Length: 440
Image 1: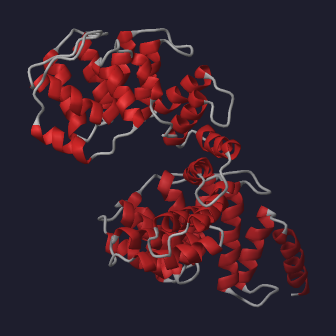
Image 2: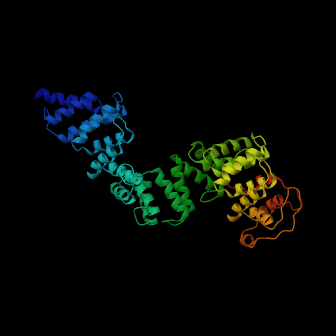
Image 3: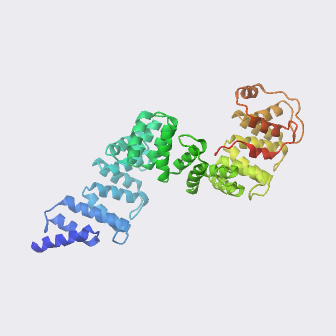
């Protein structure tokens, strides 16, 4: 008996340091009550702990199969943390055959015992329809159970459901309440979402200053969307003092993560304009290309502009310009639709077609694009403005006349209209680069 007691003491010293065999031996002694008070609970804890060390490779050789075996020993006896861990191995088939059914089975066993991590995980399964029929109501139920135990990720997820009214009654106030709980615990996504709420005044009093505060917290944790939004606030002097250098810094941080095409396009615009950075068409093209390759329509349209003029390291090519304009136009980008109409009208990079020109002008005009509305009126009235010509007398369509009457008219709009329409000047595609700076 004395020797068993001493064995337990030494096994525990080694087990506390992560020694695999000591943890296993200690678990066996606890199960049998040899040299120590019998305790199934403590034995299972050591088996679960051993599974964690083997799974992560901490102090022992990394081995998913062995980890699964140790987790199962504890899970079969009802240990909730082991049940959750075993379910997680089934997610990607680590050490076991991948099975969504097994994922849900083990998560549910642990969740039913009140294990918060498993409740969150089961909520995600219901939200994604993994191993169960997709159900927002069930997702909200399990998120709430974990959230009420203080799980920050569950609190953030529950807040998102209240924003959308998915599985719960829509409530901006409840969304803000749960986001705040998670944000105060340091959850990066919740901090970003708090910024969104303050920016829009949903569930909280609108405040650009508060939005900037929360965006900054999330941005410093690496949330690309927060970094980009913070950059926009610096550019537009909203909630923070205007600072072009900071605008570029945060847009670049977001863009370099490769997770925010919108930030990459925005950074391209900053380099194109020279706002906060040394103007560089080559750098602008680099960032536009990164965003365009991710499907960003505005970046695709800007590449079309560069190809049309032949700026940066883009060789002049009407054919390439049409390619990029079409990519953006097919996604509904209003400027690209108007630009594509212009290419069809003049037969640049594509077979000339009045019908195609009118179709694209109409698409842009229906979205309120003023130059496209003017061009569509020329065509529909029987007139056609050729490059370098004067302007023929035309009949204006009533619906677009109405749109123009109530839309804002600025010097910029008039400037581009002059170049596009040929009032006393030859049309030039350089006007494409004279639009006001909008980071995206």
